[in-house]
Image (cartoon, rainbow, N blue to C red; front, side, top):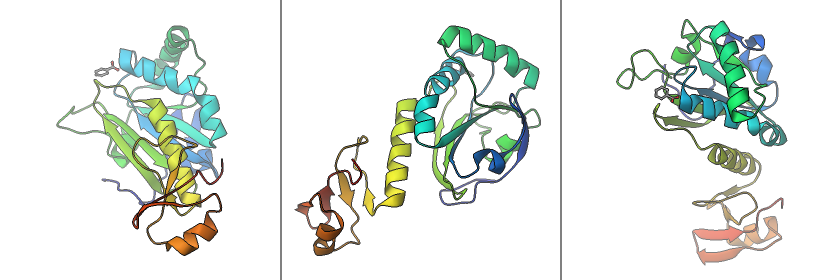
Length: 211
Ligand code: BEZ
């Protein structure tokens, strides 16, 4: 099944390096990141999981729980985690799914047959507390993802879900944001007491609402 933004993220039960989990129970009221990697004991994947482990505090600050997927047996994951911890100087403490039967990979359309018939691509889903899909990115096996970008989009998603704003190109947390076009300027000036800068009637900035 192919998922789209706004769809309900399918629930599943899976064996992981932290025991069996029910995805929804694991997420609770948190935001979630579900991300696949093509294989264990491979260089790019080793750096990606290490980077994710090193950013655990940043994910926790944002109330985000991460969960990795690979279509590889549990015992292989466990040995590989030792290598990740050793080489990336980290402590992997988030679960990695052993998706041997590809149940999760298929549910989330993580195998793209024209890229590889058997391995998952680098899919990443951000799931909101309402269990709907807020963001999807897909990278090929040869290109590691930018986890600073993942944190940046989480910041944008969380801000824009709570305020009538959107975030411009290359935005980073703390910078000015764009007032939603649906709000008339007079009302925007009341709603955003830090001020509204009108560049065009449809392009209006306001300082970050919560900084
Ligand atoms: C890697 O993680 O380095 C990798 C995995 C599968 C294919 C290509 C690269």
